[in-house]
Image (cartoon, rainbow, N blue to C red; front, top):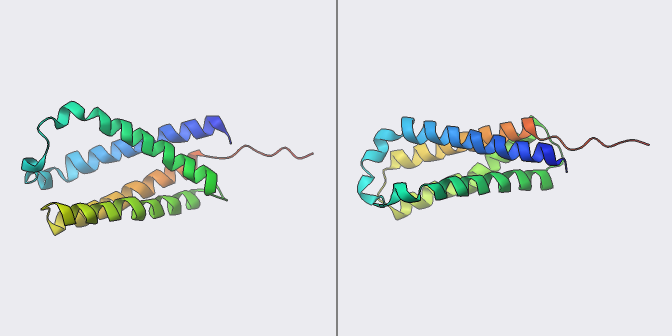
Length: 138
């Protein structure tokens, strides 16, 4: 494993994920969340640091799984990996949230679409940033 590229890829995925989370949730979906305020924890802002921690953990796992199981380290393989992980985590998560909480169908669909986009873009940056060590031929 190329540790320098691995570490850079973790940071790249983390920052891309955080930037897209901000743009999607704080700007694009801001109005959708107004109706959900009664469901929020009162101390939510006090424990928001946990979200950054879990997002960083996600970034480590995202890069680790990709570097362990991918056979080709290309942008295309990163995009595909991001799409598959997005389907696995985001789509199932959004539908499960819709089942559990009184959110609108519209918000659930937006979570699926924007979430898949977010994971695919993370996969793009992962495919762009991670390259294995070059093998030295004898």
